[in-house]
Length: 199
Image (cartoon, rainbow, N blue to C red; front, side, top):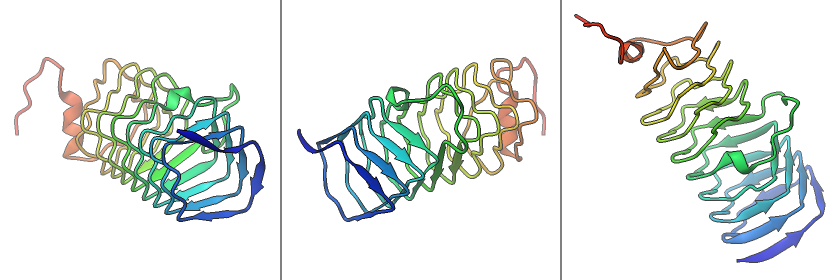
């Protein structure tokens, strides 16, 4: 692994077709930048800042994000497996639309204990993703596959699960007030209750 860039500020720039796998990026600030068809697999983003940035058709598997901030960042058609989002920088003041994912692969990632109010996971695959103890109030999971995703003591008030599939949410362990679900998947909410469901 080697360091490609130390420090610096970039604004309103397009980064396209960059291949920088197993690379260290340290202390860089990006504002209003677009990353298109870039490959950053297994790279490290240390103490970087991404504000109002967009990633389109990028590969970000197993990136490390120690101390890195993603503010109002959007990911579309990206592959980003195995990311520990808890290592990022999460300010005490909630940012508007902190993260938005659309048609992304997010398997085997962790959002454990994070404040994620208003997060968007639209038509994604989020298998074995950990949302334990996270605050996902007003989150939008519409059309997302959530097989083996972990919801334990998760705040899901006002969340949207319409057309989401394969989720398992224990309504005794999670706050689902005002959350929206669609049939037939919503029947899974009755699992774990001592009842017999008859068609």
